[in-house]
Length: 150
Image (tube, rainbow, N blue to C red; front, side):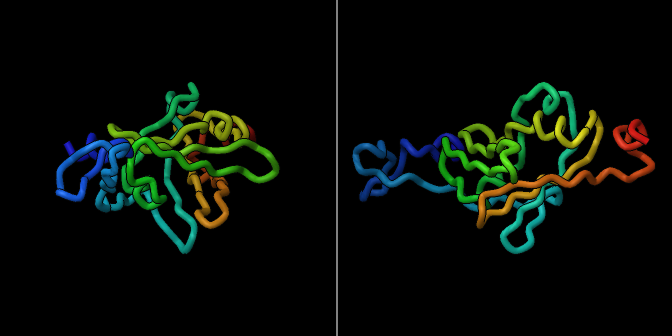
């Protein structure tokens, strides 16, 4: 119920009743979800540990914990924040919907970094510059992508 009511179209009016935002109701923001162990922060950087799967290789958006969107300030739905890669190598999109949160545009990232299905990588989002970077974090001796190139 709370997920549906966290829309930017619905909010609380001065009487404390739910109403439409177009009639002056103030949208209700999500409360902070529990931070998962796969998402870490350090200063202005948020790191998300991900594994390349078929959805990423297909170009589909992948679900992420709602804590990420909450931390990025996406507290009503729908809302989106973009992070660009340096030197014009595209962007990644983090989206908060009423039913889920997701990261999109990772197919090009996997291709650019030579990541294959099963590879682990860290997606690093700098919240002060809205830039993104990627770190391949598979162990050297256990990575199909790294052993295939050597």
